[in-house]
Length: 227
Image (cartoon, rainbow, N blue to C red; front, side, top):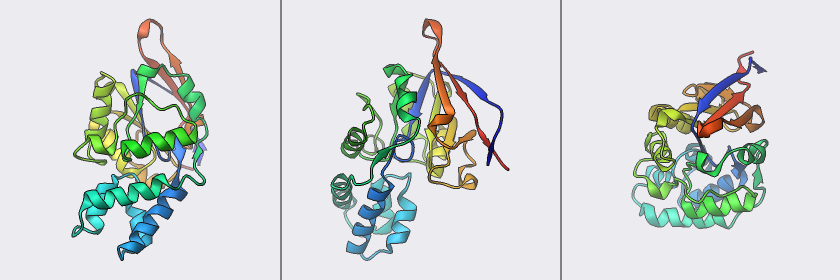
């Protein structure tokens, strides 16, 4: 892949996914879901494949609809919380967040609030006072509800928000919500991210400038283009 010319986007707020955007906890996710799948007689590889970017409770319900989803969610959540091995903040994250006023961004994640707060704190990422998590929505990504809720949390129209995602379901959700979607190639192939407006390798490709008179943000990014 090579880069194209820089692009500038004016917006009023940014809605960040967590896993694969702010932090990487892929090892923990895969180990935890493998352990749960083996407990429940499910192919671990398949469980890990379908869970990324989706709420755990929906993954559990899909894999074992005969079980109590809430009870199984608690088991998976406890497994993930107990495993922070290899968790790390991703490139460009701290610099970008440092450039943003607190009221201009939040996190919209498929993790539960308990797990999200623990993971961000463990990764050394600033934890927003309010965020949108799996336990605050009825429909998870790829449904637009999480990002609609994130825009409302910032008091903004979704069209004034940029979504930063790494998963196919997240990119679809952001697009369906009416946001501008920037996706990284951290976890998914380019073909799976066709709902995104722009692709970048990671957050080092994005710079933010606060506009005068509280007019919002100007994002400058250098998108990837097909070779």
